[in-house]
Length: 201
Ligand SMILES: Cc1cc2nc3c(=O)[nH]c(=O)nc-3n(C[C@H](O)[C@H](O)[C@H](O)COP(=O)(O)O)c2cc1C
Image (cartoon, rainbow, N blue to C red; front, side):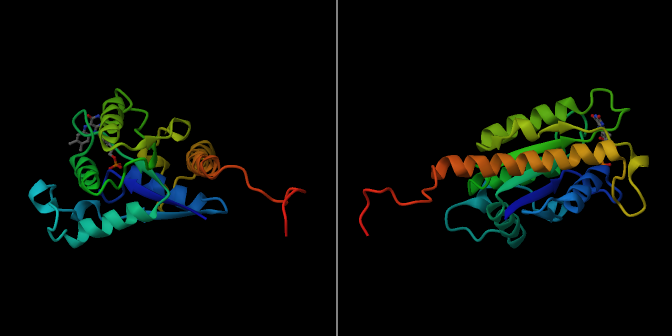
């Protein structure tokens, strides 16, 4: 079973980005478990003084770090605010650097900026790429998709029902899980299923 942590950069009620991630959770294929992280708005502002060796880490930070550590991969869906990454998401990522939580962690994103967004939230995703680079995360390019979602595409159940958009959302989640599976198989090498004839016993 592969665990994918879903992180929305928006804590707004009725967020389209959160709707995309809820839809990803609803579409998760067999063998993929999703965990929707809901605490981004409650994290304290990052302060290196609170993240020193021996310091008692804030319990909300500890819970977020545990969720990242327990995940095999992370899928982010974030809006752009004022030409960059929302402060809340940057703050979360800053907290992951102290415990190297995102170091070498496979990460992908679904850019769901609405069709009316002038630059398609390109600046937010450029800054996300830069921050993830500093954190040492592994960006899984094959799983990063642009799937424009207008607010009207989110149903009263909080899910996206447009078939094309659902296909893109499922595609991102599947590509991320497939990447994790093949990277893990590569690391562990070929599986020996039969004993060679010269082996004893
Ligand atoms: C203060 C503020 C600043 C914004 N800045 C940008 C921006 O720079 N670029 C952009 O494409 N959209 C911008 N937007 C639009 C949001 O990205 C858009 O409303 C998005 O749907 C919010 O995501 P959510 O529905 O998940 O909350 C801004 C919205 C707000 C409220």
